[in-house]
Every structure is written in C-alpha cells, then in structure tokens.
Amino acid sequence: MTALYLDSANTQEWAQISQLGLSRRVTCNPLLIQALGLPVTMATLEQLAQESVRLGLEELHLQAWPNEHGDWYPIAQAIANLGDHIVVKLPAVAAAMVAAIQLKQRGHKILITAISNPIHALWASQVGADYVAPYVGRLQEAGVDTHALLSSMVVQQKLGGPIVLAASIRNLEMLNQVIQTGVAAVTVQKKLIHEGLTDAQTFLAVQQFEAARQG
Image (cartoon, rainbow, N blue to C red; front, side, top):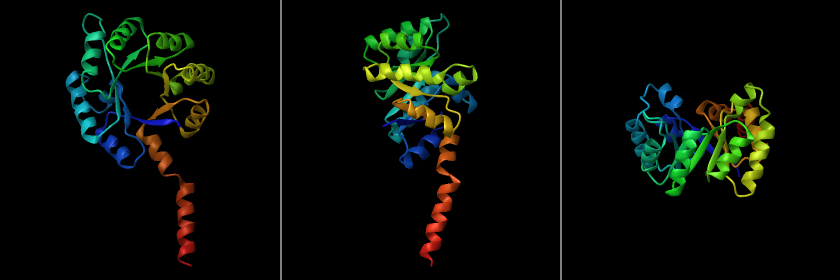
C-alpha cells in the first residue's frame, strides 16, 4: 500500500485531512512555512510539533538548516528532540549528510530530500536514511527521466533501503504514474487532495443514485 502524506505547514489542513481519515502523516519545509507568513525558526517548528501531538499525527517531517557556521547538526538535533514522531529532513549535500550520519548514530529518523540522481539515492542508503524524497515534478520540468530514477530507488526500497517518499507531484496523472513505479509513499498538497475529493464523475454518480432512489 502506498502511504499518503500531506505536504503542508497549515495546521488547519492537517486537522481536516486527519478528520477525513486520509492521512495522519505530514511533511513540511521552509518554503511552506514562509508561504504562510511564518518565520522559519525553531520557535515555529516547536509550535508545529506541539500541534502535531495535539492532533495525534503519526509522523511529522521537519526540515533542518545550517547554523551560522554552516553546521547542520545542531538544528537537526534540536528538531529531532521535538518528539519521537519527528523525522528530520536533510538535503543531499555533503554538510547535511554529515549531520545525517550523526543523527542516525543517535537513533533518530531522517529523510534525505532533494534527491536528484541515483548517486544521491545510493548515498542516502549508505548513511542509513529512513526515507528519500525526490521532487518529481521539479525534476520532470528539468528534463530528468523520473520514471528511471524512481524505479531504481524502488529497487533499493525492496532490498531494505530507504522508503521512497515522492514529492512535488503536480497533478493526478503524475500521482498515478508515481504510484505505478512502486514507491511506498507520496506527499501531496491540499489542493491536489481537494481535486481528487471533488471529482465531477463521483458527484454525477451520487446524483444518479439519488434520482433512482426518489423514483
């Protein structure tokens, strides 16, 4: 089964999707936080983590950033300390991967994000990442063969490697294609979920059922 994650920093969206039974797993990043007009700070992440506990989320993925010395570990560790349900997101760049190794040595869960090629995917496997996240839509727009990349990552996933959590999914057609590659998880924004939940064909069928019931 492909697990569904909500890609959002909006806690109201978290609550809505959770109440519908669609997902109690959320991914977040600095761009999503900034889009809400919130500062990208530890204080903001602490508030998000507290709300995730109140809502009973199973997982919350939060992205780290480097400190003034270019060291990713201190903030990454502070994020990991926010709860056992927290997964720390780190990009596939050298300084962040060093922090990933340190976090794994301390038993924390990590997601390596911005996976753009098979070397990144193998690198993430070697450091013991729990999840890997390629930005599918962004990569397609850059001309990358995302089907080949996802397929190779799914091979590693089946061999016990990181869970492939596909991100940057632009539309329902792309979502279909991604699921067919065998990824274990996808993360989508609320607008795409809304599109799926308000499909005209479903509403037409319901109207026809009701018309039949009324004779």
